Length: 148
Image (cartoon, rainbow, N blue to C red):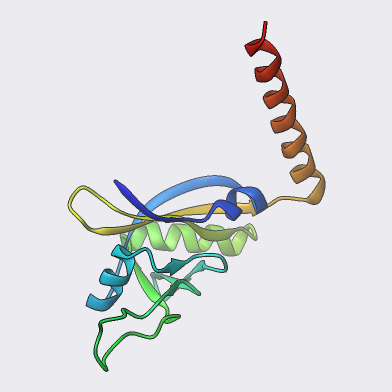
């Protein structure tokens, strides 16, 4: 699997509860832009509508060598999921107040564009501080044991 983009900020801001792999419905020039790593996932989120899952604010830059029929960079794109999965995830996000966020976009072994989405819960500020403190303690412990 060749990773195209990763939303590293999502793991810092949210607590990941569950993940799922989904396909992306793309146009031809969008695929070419993805292969060139011209994607921005910072404000992207997913929402269920009419039994389908859609991804919003996923910015895929227009292909440089495209023609007049280039795609809109911030258009909403449909995620390719089974209907049962889409309904389940959208109901979980609505009932429990959770969010669905893309974690990474990649090409699988068959050169299909896939997105890994996650059901997340927002972290509080003290949770973030606690995570940073744990990371620093672990780093310090590794450094001390390395020199002994």
